[in-house]
Length: 159
Image: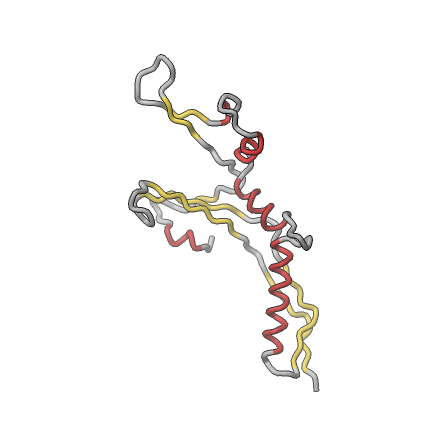
């Protein structure tokens, strides 16, 4: 790993790869006829009783990295482009501009940008007041894309 979230990891509290793990929401309550303290219960078995929307229930069954994957490489904007498509186009443009900045006689052709279609999700739970003095715990999530590359097959210098 090599993301911003890793700045907070320690051997006793590491950053954890949660790729493929759905979000788990727990309800804590005292069961009928029981004495306090309450106990944790998974939310999903109570979804109908709580009248939760089907879209929320579906989201709770979807690993967070898959939601990131959808936003990154599957959801199209009004021009029919994904965030991944727009990023590839921006990288291609920046490489071309960067080469032109070498001098007016330089041009880049056949710029090949390779971007992954999926990422990984990492998490860490921090105790204490990192950003909010009222918070007892903070969960940091990080969607990470690795394996990106841009290659210029032809760099042309005009004579």
